[in-house]
Image 1 (tube, helix red, strand yellow):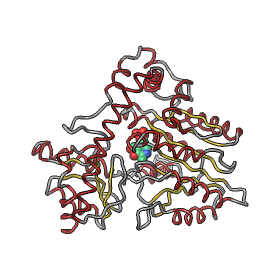
Image 2 (image 1 turned 60 degrees about the horizontal axis):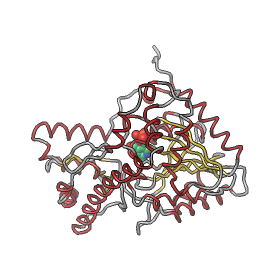
Image 3 (image 1 turned 180 degrees about the horizontal axis):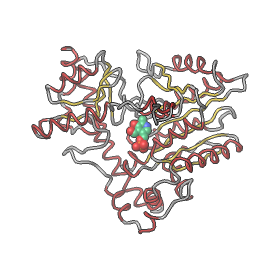
Image 4 (image 1 turned 90 degrees about the vertical axis):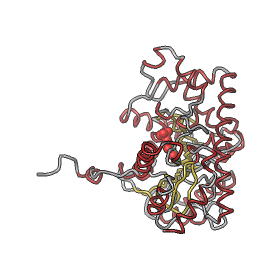
Amino acid sequence: MNSCVAPHAQKKTKPSKDRIFGASEAAQKRISEIGADAVINATIGCILDNDENFVVLPTVSKVFRGLKDAEYFKYAPIMGLPEYLELVQNACFSQSRPEGFTAAIATAGGTGAIHHAVWNYAEAGDTILTSAWYWGAYNQICEDMDRHLATYPMTTPDHKFNLAACEEKVREILAHQDRILLIINTPAHNPTGFSLTPEDIENVLKMLENAVAGTDKTATLCLDVAYIDYAGEREEVRKIFRKLSNLPKNIFGLIAYSLSKSFTMYGQRCGALIGVTSDEKQILEFINANKYTSRACWSNCNRGAMDTLDTIYSNPELLDTIQKERAHYYSMIQERGDIFTEEAKQCGLKMLPYISGFFLSIPAKDPEAVCNRLHEDNIFCVPLAAGVRVAVCGVPKHKVYGMAAKIKAAMDAV
Ligand code: PLP
């Protein structure tokens, strides 16, 4: 008998092992055996404070809980609440809104935004490009829609963005297809904490422009900014967006924005895909194509999350308080990352260039073996394909001290 699962979906029927949840389960098991104080759980991708409590920005929680019934329970429009579509662009761009036509569509978190980008800006069989250290969901999103993910080495040996490697892959892919979608997760990249400078973004755009020059082909740059609010000074980190001003018509800009980390609303599943172009026709195409896809995927998104943003942005005092609360947690995570980086330098542990953000990574030949060896020290990290991910967002400061040396010892032992 044939499988009831259709042929295109059969590649997905084997049980998949999620490295992150697997590592997190192992940490939980050890905690239940010997207690949380004795275990370092560096697997969790959300913020825990220095007492290991789950962090929700207090004012976001207050606003969300204070909504009226209708603000939670009514349907939202498919595109998203009209006020939200404007406010989410303010939240994303702040003072660096690019010149040109911009529009937003509500999505189910940043994941939903990446989904729409992959579905509507690449076609079946196409190859989509991202850096060699990447968030694993990119691959699943692509494969689920019969697209494929290719990668380039993200940084040069002197820890700069590897534009030449990116260009080589862009040209290789464009030799076989009509359009290219390049996804760059910056600032505060997951899983390394690396960020591109505004000049890097400018160079990437120029490179794309050159790669399609003299052809009918097009290029789309999708900036996944899921961690932008934990990446440094608010306006400084947003300067990358100005580089999307006045794009040539054959270059389209997409931004995947998420309320998950920025407003600690992870489970409320809300974000936005924002389009940027100098071509009015293309912004209308962006709106219509993505609205259609939303209707076909999830219809409309979480109304309470959108109304929360609306309430926050209509009251400057609330917004100011939330920005201060967030700045506090940004500094808390940054301090942990900086302690780890400094200790890594002292003990000779090689790591990917960490600038800011929830995660940092250590390259390893056998990441699984390193992580298993670390279990002997009651340290739990995530083994990725090319290294070990440490989620400093969830490790209290006092437990960060000494971690780098223990990881170095584990690397030397395996
Ligand atoms: N992009 C990256 C790199 C991420 O790590 C995440 C979350 O882990 C997201 C996007 C989107 O997250 P969400 O769908 O929870 O908003």
